[in-house]
Amino acid sequence: MPRKPRFNLPGYPLHLVQRTHHCMLCFFKDDDRRFYLESLHNSCERYSLDIHAYALMPDHVHLLATPGQHNSTSRAIQALGCKYNRYYNSTYERSVTLWENHFEARLVHDERYFLICSRYIELTPVRCGLAIRPGDYIWSSYRSNALGEKNALLTPHAAYLALDRRISRRHVCYRKLFEVETNIASGAVGNKETELAI
Image 1 (cartoon, rainbow, N blue to C red):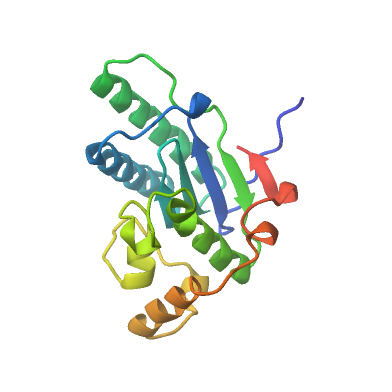
Image 2 (tube, rainbow, N blue to C red):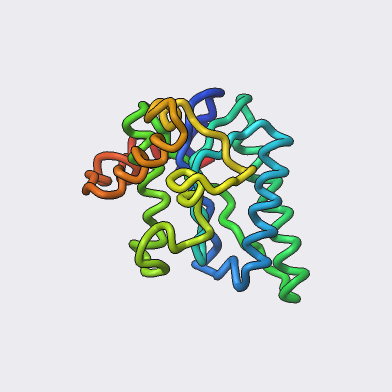
């Protein structure tokens, strides 16, 4: 089956999912997660990829990101994957290829969809039973987007900024998104037309 075409238009957000081979665990301790986030930050700065939301899961990672250049996404995720793979093998004395060759990328086509996608990502730890409330899980962007916790990795997107001009009110508006049920099936997941392997 031929590989799907790359989609990486500068300025258009993508929902990215980086998965491990055979559902291997990619994080065993907090130091692993901290190293991953630090490496993600460095790769994104180097290759002009803005991160708006994320969630680190035991065997995969969700990112909501906007590329600044046509090859930003591929280069940043490839550099990140290689760096973390070396760290993983060195730390745990293994010799494995941790990540799947191609990460998933879904186009985020409008502002409403962007907020649905951000909500979906930050609720993933709750759906998977890792936390009762999204704010309980420290390895996602929820505490920054909803509570104002400082996070140098994140770049606010226009759809998020448009919730309110005042920062405190913006956090309140964002939290309200989590108080109502959203039809995720028509939003951040299940949209095969915009799901692309990069």
